[in-house]
Image 1 (cartoon, helix red, strand yellow):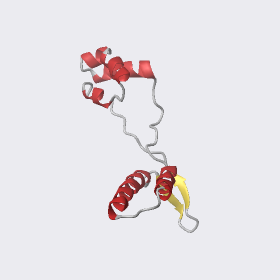
Image 2 (cartoon, one colour):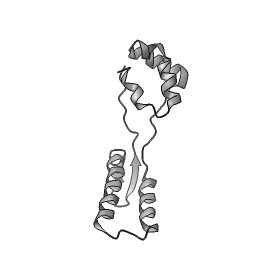
Image 3 (cartoon, one colour):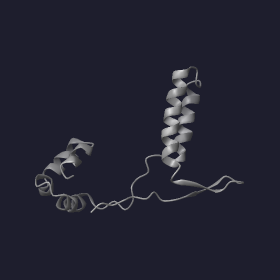
Length: 113
């Protein structure tokens, strides 16, 4: 696992910092995890990939481009919409169907030690 994490680094600077850690060289996940937390700090909760605002942005993008005019544009829109909605469904649960008020639940994250 320690060796695989390098594939997920988004910049060369992050990858270089990771490669200088002893836990990475030794393929020792516990040591690497401790070194990463020491360098970058602990993340309290994961950032959300999408919010309900992203659905509105998607709609506005389509509207500003003149709407959906062909089947391919519809497929592209539906793919983006479905990806966002599938992500949000477990996070947002309908609180009251009569008023359509939403109750936000924190996403659950499994921590592997």
